[in-house]
View (tube, rainbow, N blue to C red):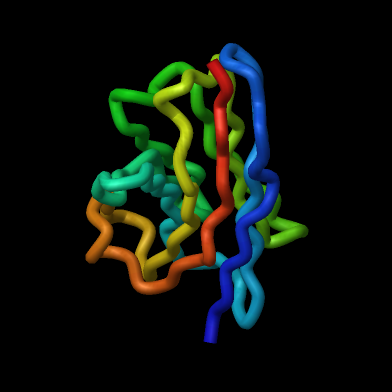
Length: 125
């Protein structure tokens, strides 16, 4: 049974940076795709980006391209979301998710099987 734990959220000024972490326990990310989603109040949970664990092939939503970067640390079994040039509109609860398979670029909530509890990111304007 895989457990995902996000960390690194907090309050940051517009234009600033923040790095979120997603650590897995119970198993490694080997053979998995790992995605990041976010949900603002009264809005649907939306796709942010994803990576394949072994190949590191990333894909991002248009709203965060050129600002957010997903990376990973094999030794720590951790995926990171580096967020730069943060905007007020980025304020949301950010969730880490995982699914088996690395070839499919999954962008929908229902395509992921494992979810973390989420971490709050608040960008002040």
